Length: 346
Image: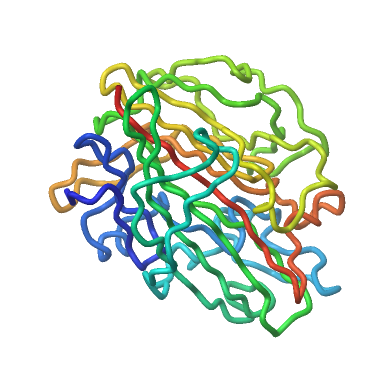
């Protein structure tokens, strides 16, 4: 394992490891070639053009047209298609100067002990995986420190940006990171204590597409109340809604303060993790479908070997008139958002 606190790979601008007192708290592989051959779960990838699912694998009305997409999660499109942005080689890393302020975090949002922030970039051509328009996408990673009750806190901040260059007057964007967290480095997430900021969620059909226009109360957990991940329950793979007023969600959320979406802790490792974002929603997934064989000395990863927190826009917003503004990127505009991980050991 690397001595660096966080490591990345150009493929997918992927987060390969996040090391907290000798424990890598994210799932991954030791080499980029293994991500190419074994990363069906999307470990650590930057997801785009559109994270999560698009109903019936098509854009119903963008540029006044219907755009068919790959049904790689039949009958829907998932995480940008067969070769989404997480499966492509990004340009980078390039140093861009240390970004030390993230409003909404503790300590007035200030980070210390950072070196250079780094940027990965990708140009996605018009028609890439069926999506319209040539898009320039960037992700800027910042590693720094804060203090929490006298303890050093590792902070990994992500800033996403996308711009429509040509080939269309509008397109759709919804980026996120798909890290799977495991607070002990053990075989499962059992025993992890979790608190979600809300239990408002979007009910979905069997394919994971929302069936209502308004969020409802999630029946399995309470917002703001700690629960424990057991051996098989609660089994969660749902989109929780932070901003329940979809018409107020801008295409660029970077001007909004960060909100703490999820807090987690494991009594065995004594590691804490918090996930913050400027995004209006997040998918929380307890890893039911992970199925990765033993490879290169890394033990097999099975069901519930990691959990995901995927800050994002509403699922399938690009096909819902009342939600579409949050995902529709027009020429001359910029899409943007921020995600921050904070981790420390008691």
